[in-house]
Image (cartoon, rainbow, N blue to C red):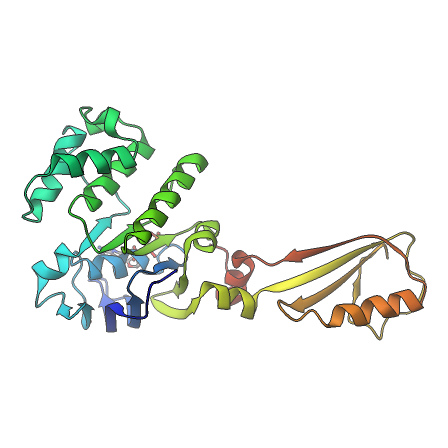
Length: 308
Ligand SMILES: Nc1ncnc2c1ncn2[C@@H]1O[C@H](COP(=O)(O)OP(=O)(O)OP(=O)(O)O)[C@@H](O)[C@H]1O
Ligand SMILES: [Mg+2]
């Protein structure tokens, strides 16, 4: 969870129009709280990478401002940049370099003296220590991605951007990376990630922003989002097909009349006892009962109209 409500990034009226003239970002306003994990969700081409790349000073905005603490990124570029680590969506590094050299080089870029103990710790945390002398080109895709993470972390940034950090990474490794991100959060690092894996946002994020066609259409605490928009279903499987009239009850029956479903807003369970009492009174007997929860995926589809 975030440690406090202090804002570490402020984005004001940010717009980006690339040369082709189409707006990739329209008037984005967003504040990121110190110590939180913020997940940016959106379909391909929504503007996620553009937003991250502007904050990191890689893409120039067409209009608007971004502050890291009190530094405006274009006016105080070095200060802003040294606070940030970025794991870009596309792997960009010299493939013929050794792992340890490319990581140390990244630290040097920020004017920090080499620190062998720090390099070792970062590489060990990412299970890359035994590959430290390997050329990057000889590594697997998941390992290359972890090298990018090592490069982003080596100068001890206060804010870490992860643009699709686990795309193409297997499930076990993905879990390891999530654990590592949580550990980083415990040390006070603020984390902003983009992802196509709803499960990743659902599991990791304190807050979620949904972006579509360059517009930030919703920003919400994850738990609030789940509570507000999450639906629950109570499903009853009957012993025999339904013959009694239940049209006065808020239930849907399956075509074979063997299943009844009650859909309700999460946290609003009081309707259940009313339904159960009425079913009892009418002698409608069920053999089992279960509840189902809607996922962030269902919520996303409900808002944006498409799957991720
Ligand atoms: N360098 C560029 N020049 C021109 N247009 C660009 C450039 N980079 C991105 N765009 C356009 O800006 C829009 C947003 O792209 P962006 O890469 O930010 O999306 P994204 O949400 O990160 O998508 P994905 O999920 O595929 O990574 C797209 O329409 C894209 O074609
Ligand atoms: Mg992207």
